[in-house]
Image (cartoon, rainbow, N blue to C red):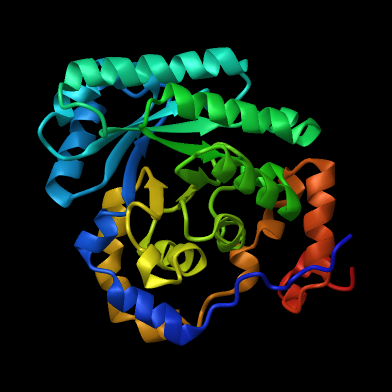
Amino acid sequence: MKPFRLPLVEFRPETLVEIVQWLTPQRLAALIDVTDLKADTQEPKIHEMVRWATEHGFYSICVNPVEVDLLPRLLQGTGVRECYVIDFPLGKLPIALKAHQAAQVVAQSRTLRGEGPGWVELDMVINVGRFKQDPEYTRREIAAVVEAADGEHVKVIIRSSELVDEEITVACQIAKEAGAHFVKNSTGMEAFGATPDHIRLMREAVGGDIGVKAAGGIRDAAAVARLIYAGALDPALRTPEKFRIGTSSPLRILSSLESLQRTTETWTGEVVPCTICPSSYAEKLSPTVREFHLQRCRQCPHVASREDLRGG
């Protein structure tokens, strides 16, 4: 096994301060995909998200594909993009059906919105089981969805909580090579969502050529600042074309920004690595991935912060 790099993300307080000071409500909103992927979502919630997006300047609204009969009409003329999840959340459709779903969503959106191409994004989920068995399968499924999207942006959800570090790197590289526009860590329905370590790994894997989207459990501006540190440390990457946040708590994130900026100097010294490390969720993971994280954790200089692994 390759030696671990520990910890993967080390937060320099002065850089966190710079990121927090760089953030404004407008800049923060422009990085956000407002998300609601629950099974019981109804039309009033879609109207509410449209209102949020138009009032605050959120980049897109991310919903299940069934909402394509409603969302294009509501967003017509607003400048807000539509985002639909494909083969969500498991990624277990055959490639042909996954591509068909993508093509149908794009065609229906364009017809109803009537504003031509460029307003749709597709967040597709890879088949993690097939990826572990045959990475070339993943290349084919991503390429098929990219082709079916007919030029619309495709984000590839790799379900990083189910992968070890090397697999995260390979999955992201394949997505980039297959023509994806973004890589995304999570559906928000796995053992854990966005962590700085995984977002840093993903950015390192794709470089600055394509975007990285962080999703899952992001509920305040402090979490956003740490994820920007991990995935958009270079200010040139802090654009919606290169970095995005998926969240169902956009208003809470915006409202927490002012408080964060008032307490920046104090907050930057309070980042406890173990509280935001993938290893914290090890007991929820598959045996192979769990053991990977626990081995990594035992070698980490911050292991003293974890009661359950002291002396392990």
